[in-house]
Image (tube, rainbow, N blue to C red; front, side, top):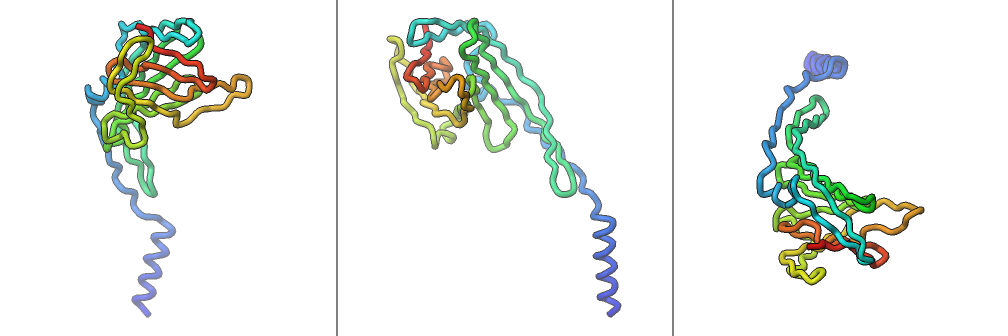
Length: 195
């Protein structure tokens, strides 16, 4: 009976006073690798141009910055701290038609995340061949008379519907050397890299 009483007192004290909080851990993911950064080939001095299928051209300037980020991962009794980096590359258009924004992050230790948001549509860009399971690899294609190799055809992972403008970006053709090669719209129009 005495043993049962002691266990009961122990359980009640744990319930009333709780467990001692654990010591939070700090996980430092380090810097984003140069290989990952080169997956988005745009630099500050670049001036890429995309040409619409109707002939209109959009010129872009590039803004690119890498920031140190902190994320708190809270569990049952404690919050661990995750230190990582995020690189944001923004293609600033001279006309307000499309605005690609790339995000590279080493938030997860198993892979580098690379994505691009273009207006209301989001796309994942594979950082390595191992991440290409759900991605169509076109290999090579001709756009506006120029041959491009190692091309990915990326379908949107998410897009937001706008009842005032139902046209959305359906797919993105991309490679690591030039970046965006072609943007296909849901109405069969497109933007293509003009070189």
